[in-house]
Length: 328
Ligand code: TRP
Image 1 (cartoon, helix red, strand yellow):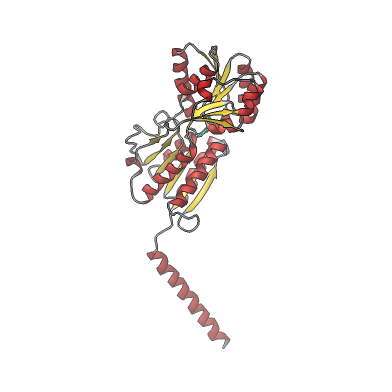
Image 2: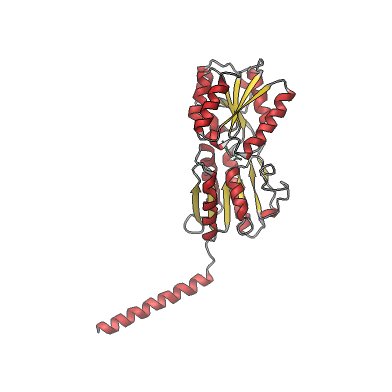
């Protein structure tokens, strides 16, 4: 009796194994997506969450019809290669690479896995694609081109006497170097002296900021990932020196900076998902043009910062339909 039961259950077991085998061979493999970001800061987290939300809209349910591996390099570019190689080991169908350093590392795997980069300020300058319209090379994505001209013009509107601008950034980020070059050009054409301050981590950035803040009429940081991770401390340095601190993204205003002119990053996260969907449905990444987000810009102003330094907004800005007062 005992024996036959055992035999029966063994039979059942092998039957289930067989059943499992045959059904999995007819079922399609659930897409595996590796999502990496260089660091956790407000904007990159917003992009990641908006990406997942839009994937859900498109019918991809986490754990049911799609599997994700989320990775964060904790601000260390040296961690990125291990992350990408893990995505390759997991047989990922697409890599989503959020921010420039992440995308540069993912690009090394594009010969094996399609790459969709997200929020890369200057995809050509970062060496990711030769052309935005025809990326080729199994890689495409979204770009958050920074509107340097409009931001510096805003600074000049708020303070018509603006003569010196301190530009604070991490020279190790290709996105910030591109933006520095744009800022230099604009400042030169508009009679503003640009003074650079750099740092590869928060300790260095804070000491650069302290030196800069004493020398300039206003400070500016583009959407630099290292700066964005330490906005509270850096804004305090500018505030204590009594100068406005302009920044390259709405999140950097939310996190303590004074003002910017910028895009909606949720839309950019959604578009990243649309591109992944197209690729999962068979389109070649290199055939999808890079989408640059530069329309529908808002002016973001930090109310507490403005009040603390008694900064007055001119009527032209106060009456602008696109003005968003942060913290009001
Ligand atoms: N554009 C940045 C890059 O190319 C990434 C980024 C997106 C970012 N949003 C930001 C950086 C906000 C700082 C703040 O890497």
